[in-house]
Amino acid sequence: MAAVVPELRDEIPTVWAYPLCKRVEVCFKGGERSAVIGVLELLRAPDFPWDRHQPLQLAIAGLVFSSREIERRTIH
Image (cartoon, rainbow, N blue to C red):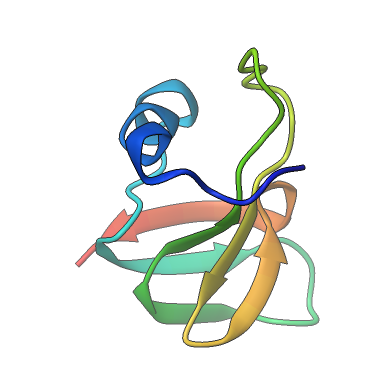
């Protein structure tokens, strides 16, 4: 995976339907973590050409996680 290029950052939310750079509540699958609220950041860009099935490396307030760990997300 490559670092996020600012010009591509706008395309990624469209393909994956994740509200990057917005305040969200993310609820996680399983019992290790329940939920976190904050600004959703993309840490690393996915491979190009875009494959919407590829997991994204995301973070909120320093908590790093994969898009595959998310049960649901809500914009706040």
